Length: 323
Image 1 (cartoon, rainbow, N blue to C red):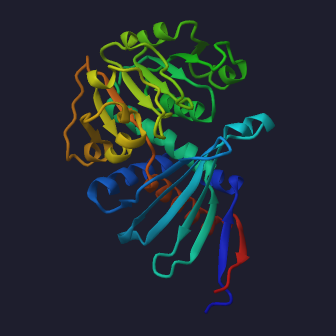
Image 2: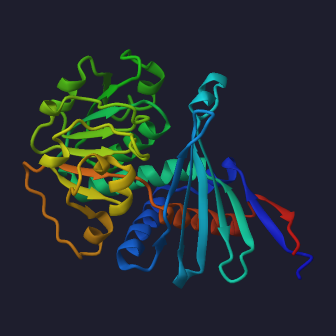
Image 3: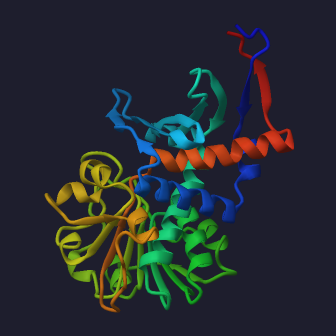
């Protein structure tokens, strides 16, 4: 028994300190590769609705070759908006796989935001047309913000953005954050905005179909973020059926992602493309969809990155945790 054992606690400020864009992209890419190679495991996802109106979930996994084990517990509590608080909440715990002892508890909100944004960026880099110029964004929340931030850094010709807000009205604060990087304006007609765009990003709570299937044009890439629970969707019928569909995890996508709505849909995991198991060459007229449900391995590789940074920089607070 070690009476001097300690547990490291990393709050949001300490976590954000370590989330450098290129490092996060590298960690998320590693997660997809580990998944494809079978070197990292993803355990069955827990995702349940609560009596409070929220949704609670646990995503867990491990990488035996790296002694990496842990989980993220979190979900979505829409009533938080009534008090001005963030509805998405998450906490990550890394565990010593040899002893079961906790190593670090991290605020998972910033990690979830960053790793999902990085995943979207890898999808754009891998599947979207490099010459994409116009983007339609559904949502103006935290995830919409990070997806657009990464998109503008990933696609060199992207310059024109239309966004669909919950109210349908302009959100000047949101626009101000991007005005020096692109032309940005609220979409007056969401179907027209989709039809005119090379890239469509859906980052909403996933309560309803966001546009008409007839608006989807050949050559478009879609990044789908909001469908992460059974019963959620953002895409209309007859889009997946016309598309080349890519996912982070096939089983998750078919149970809680957009793919849940098309029985037997053929889809390819992005990790298999990144490691060359499945060759991919985009035809100009292809419609591509990246259905992202979020891998536990993404949380773990980024949390490890943050943990190692905190150790080297002295960030965080330690508490006694004897055993």
